[in-house]
Image 1 (spheres, rainbow, N blue to C red):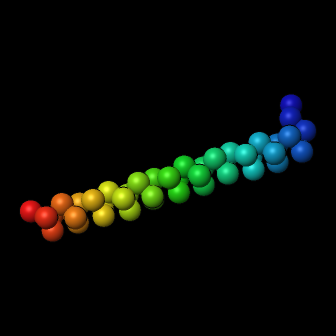
Image 2: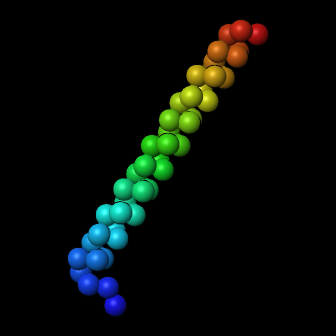
Length: 43
């Protein structure tokens, strides 16, 4: 059984990881859209 402090630390750590993952996906999608636009403009 985890103590309250350990549980909070685990939740915070998982939350930070999830936020970082979402930010990474958003950045990749933004880059992807920019690349697609430049490709369509070039062709």
